[in-house]
Length: 192
Image (cartoon, rainbow, N blue to C red; front, side, top):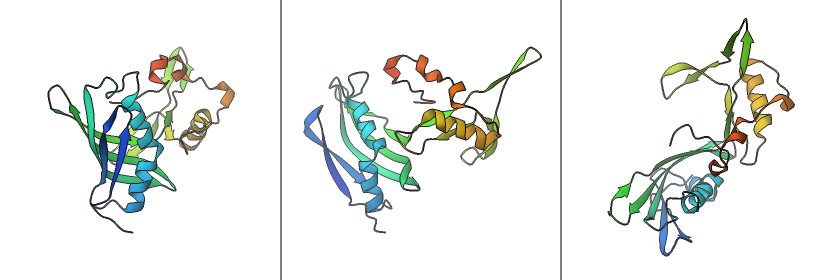
């Protein structure tokens, strides 16, 4: 496994055709992880979102992407589970950098199961070990899809069965994201 801080790639974005963007690998990122990162759907979708006419931060020309530093790639089998990078984005009017730390992950599902008993409604939660918080926490049954084009409902059913032992039928599931404004691409982001 080779690693080098000299791994670099250049991309040209339609919104800034005369300003190529350098993409560099941080020290410790292998050449194969670097290549996987820049070829990943996570990275390509992020670039696409930057230039999207519907809220993309580069779409109106007031900001520019100067460079990207790939800092970490965590593989889940043969696919990227988590991708961490830092984007240097400049506000052209002020010359100030916009905070640009990105922690990208693939699509995931969470399942809200409501049970009614004696006139009371209860949400089903599961205990999960969460190393980042150093605690065991109660949360909705949830999990990541196996790929970017995966079966959201099938993943939800599988996660509920794996985590809490309840067998659900796909046809009984309601996709709550279908009620969202189309501008959200029917997605929910737990934090910015």
